[in-house]
Image 1: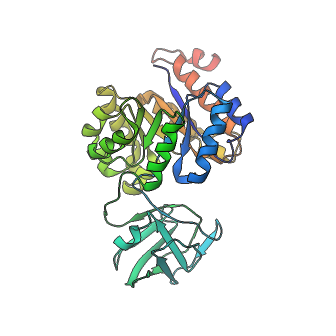
Image 2 (image 1 turned 30 degrees about the horizontal axis):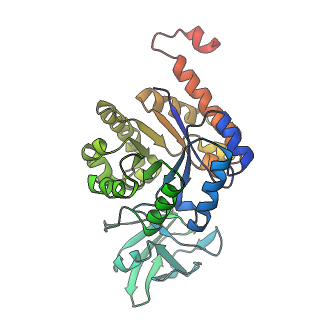
Image 3 (image 1 turned 30 degrees about the vertical axis):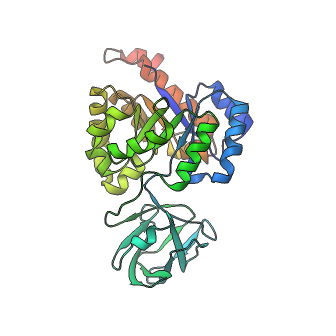
Length: 337
């Protein structure tokens, strides 16, 4: 089975010229991340993509994830020791005010809860509760922009699909979308819920990016077409030094059940700005392929990066080398071919 390349579209790549160039390179799937796409824009995006290319489209759900809402800028500075109001209603956030989505999630927060925003860029601890907002103190200096993932220091229930996800999936089905990705798949029940919406004839990718998803992998695998290891969000719940070993175990287990595995997050992250990746990045991608991953997912590299086409070219170059390589390949063949 050939290695699949999934490309996330965003401001850097959502143009006719770039999309056609990516399609010409052989990209297998164009991913639209609903966490960073307004519902009001989705219909127009789908219409444009269908007129530009025949490459299939995948809608990637927001899923069971807490995020802060819009901020006054993408570089709002929070200072340690300052107080912040966490509003239950949606507001435009600043250094003293913030709100979170899903809309009702802040009502689940309690005094002494700690909320980490954007990979612990800012950590705030709740100290007081009132009807309209919560009061929190900033525990560390940091900068936060809009729509950044956040974590609570305890488990709370979040629906597998947000209201926006359900509307977006319905729009996708109406526009002929056949591929859907469920973020933060935690259980078989999550998969069954999305299947009721998208039906049994569509392709479903379950994203494994939580401890519960890893633990419940055995019940998830028989119900999905592929899984996707999102190493970024998984590293919010598991210390980063354990991620390479979890990746190996998940790929091995999924392969034993004949379920293809895609891998995402930080594959060629330096190419968001640079024209070439680091040696560590290319080694990571090669190792991921050698483990048995059957798909590679580019995210920020193609959605907001300065070099989306060069990034995809590098991925295909690495896949080409992987396809040539065997344990018996001579050193001269590796060097010269």
